[in-house]
Length: 116
Image 1 (cartoon, rainbow, N blue to C red):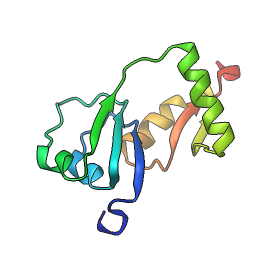
Image 2 (cartoon, helix red, strand yellow):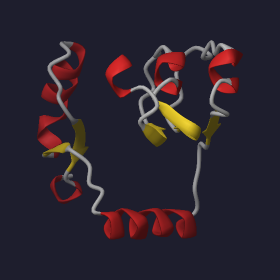
Image 3 (tube, one colour):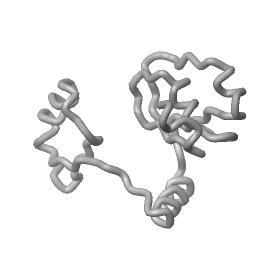
């Protein structure tokens, strides 16, 4: 984390796992924002000093409408922002689950809807 301190304007946290949120906040530049979309099982413990030092903020949303989704997709297209995923067929769901339990996952699994 020290190598990347104060490097990012925005971090989009999509995981629902418990993380040390202060470590991620420390990666933000002045006025940076950590956007939380994944819902962890327990509340995050945040040291307020981490936010005050650098005027950083934490934001979040559980939902977004079609206009927001389209705006995000347009932005990603313009900036060439892509995601790394592993596309699987529906009949591979059980193996994907077992791999997740075994921590044998590099990217998020995405189910090819045409195989459902």
